[in-house]
Length: 363
Ligand SMILES: [Zn+2]
Image (cartoon, rainbow, N blue to C red; front, side, top):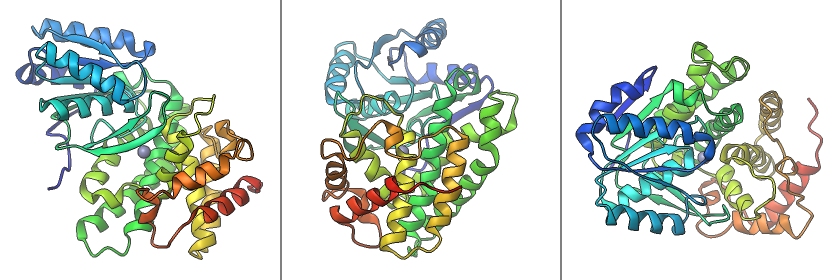
């Protein structure tokens, strides 16, 4: 079964106002899931607007990341209150939690991204983390959300680093899908890969301007937020599992295991993962263009103030066996790294990261 897109997508200025009557047809007593104190005022507005449409809400926040503890607690609250839908309003982990809950409860899901940091508002996937933010597993859901509300004025309230992080996560679509799936004979997969290339080029063109003039009126800003939250999701929908992730996300998942004091966003870690993946391609797959791609990406990422090394993420790879821990987690049996068209073992990762982190990338 293909799970290509949400049933309905409201996007643009006033998307929320346009979505409200449709939401009122779908639910009368939803559970609203959010998290951060930064998005609290916006969530209050959402709740008040829903109340005006005679929708009675139960309001809850994640205490941690999207983890079993929070999911179990919210499942119980939702069941006890006979909630008839989940409305998730927040960043990627809130959206994931809302989708997983709706899936578990077999009730409709409405996603309202409050930043453009991921495509989680679109997809039929959810990631589970530990309470401490360590990646555990991803879950395939039975459908994409019923309604996605992508309101520019909501996204505008998010800090600029969430947009930069989303850009790095979107770039990974091309770097991961083109290496894992370019030999596929499946036309839809090939088309998804080509969309991810166009997406990458659009991001190269518009990202700097989007961050410099962070405004709803700026067409570059609108293009970039839609790349991150809509197109990136569509690529996953059309291309399927192998189009989504490879080494960059496998390395992300490994880095989250270390629980560094410095909290980095998902895409900030994935961006470093792309660079390490390219280095791995150069060393193991004789990719002659990898070095050039690394230089191009590092230059671009630095302009966006994104981290470009594991050191930038606040992790000393030589401390506490961190390098070995990353290598072993990256290469565990179920890791996406094994989608690569060449074999990779922990020694390869140790060698690649040692060279990568030790190298001063000349620009
Ligand atoms: Zn991602």
